[in-house]
Amino acid sequence: MKGISIALVAAVMLLSCKGDPIQKESEEGKATVQSNSPNGFKTYCNPIDIDYSYMSHYRANNNVSYRSGADPAVINFKGRYYMFVTRSHGYWASDDMSNWKFIKPQSWYFKGSNAPAAAVKGDKVILYGDPSGRGPILETDNPELGDWKTNYAVLNPPGGIQDPDLFVDDDGRVYLYEESSNTWPIRVVELDPENYYVPKGDEKDLFQLAPEKHGWERFGQDHKSDLKPYLEGPWMVKHGDTYYLEYGAPGTQWNVYADGVRTSKSPFGPFEYAPYNPISYKPGGFLKGSGHGSTVKDNHGNFWHFATMAISVNYKFERRLGMYPAGFESDNGQMYVNTAYGDYPHFLPDTEVDNHKERFTGWMLLSYKKPVSTNSGLVDRDINVVDESEQGYMQEQIMGFGIDRINDEEIRSYWVSEANNDSIHIEMDLENKMNVKAVQINFQDYNSEIFGRPDSLRQQFVLDYSLDGTQWKTLADYSKNTRDMPHGYIELETPVDARYIRYNHVYCTNKYLSISELRVFGNGYGAKPKQPANFTVVRQKDRRNAYLTWDKDDSAQGYVIYWGISKDKLNLSALMYDNPNYELRALNTDQSYYMQVEAFNENGISEKSKIIHVE
Image (tube, rainbow, N blue to C red; front, side):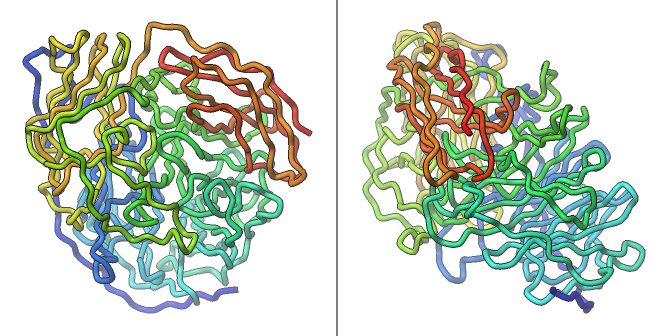
């Protein structure tokens, strides 16, 4: 057991930073332009498009610049959402989970909070996130101002507090859960809110990973590393009389980074492993991984799960944030997080839908591997990154920065422009007339020289569209944009028919214009794929693994497999492009499963295959 002692500490102060909303409208009219903020969108698209901070805490060791957002702790305080993110030098607030305003608090941690914990206690927000692993609980009744107060009672366990979570129960009792390690278990201790949040007794060990039983808890890309996995990021949610303790595994830099859950009737446990684990899992698609997250109830009574997603190019801890519909099954309380088509447009919390669990718009990806060209020459320069691939702690770099990288649905690859001026353009041929409904532009930090949160960050561009490649109209005009939008998502007020899309560059703050993906969403006018034929599942001798096969459909862009522990709750999914067949390595050894598959293309989604029961 770790004991907790008390010492003294003083709060620290940081400067403020603000950005201006943009007010720009195209001459082509309001019908196709959404360039104001707040944006009034009904949809969103992962990764969340916020002004991610450039990490600066490793600058003394290396001069590698990269943005990151990880370990989100999201709370609902008086109907407004607050999102606390690792090492961001502040936090974000929103009324709708679409428009997030960055708040530079009056008093904060000099080095930025590390895996911050936040909770609502009465009429205050309480928080812990001292990067030293030792410090007091902070509190404020005005998070918009951020006048955080300290009570000077430092929580100081041997080894420090890692990846903390603060949980306030219905009766007002407060608990601290914590750990991030491939050695130590998740722990809990009750804190005394009437006595400076002093611990009531010693921490209690709760549980560790069991990768020999739980395939999804194995380390590495696709769970294929023999290195010991990491257990981290606890987050407690109470639903009914059940305590759901979420936890992250097996490693933040991998495509299989996920959240699992254990349940109990007491905040102290014992916690039972949920047979439907993991709950938040996204091993495929454009942006992969969905671990170390938090679950929050919105103003309509629905739950959302915010999670950490990996890029891991400039550094293994280069990450972004995603949000997914979440909840609890009404008949048995099973927790779910729906990540199917999780980086395609989904409806926002304030947009009413028939079923909260199914918020996917049905807007398909129109841009995947379509012909694309640019007037910028090919860049061939060394990359300035922290590469730990040889040690087995990150994937190898994807080299080559040609224009074909811009629509390969891989966030780790990217196009780099020879120049950064308003003469550069990119032209994409969707090959057929498509009904375009949204565009997402994902900028990348190639050899960036930016650190911290300068107030000059912005991206400026104009999007055009055409049916014949000759006559062009404006799709969206961001030429005077003053907002930092590294994953600029643009929902069109009115869809347009187009075959060609053109990106006209105006300005970006980085030295190099670099884009990891130019994504176009909407629907084609052709046929959907047919139901996948000859679907089979073979569970391997290692029962953590199963091999799924089905016939290739030449009209399919990709496939999504679904699985779960009951026929009517196939809550887990994995998306893959191009070729059929998949080795699923995320199973629990002592559990049977139900599985099925569907195909998709620009025109929509096929009928699902028959469901197969796997003993």
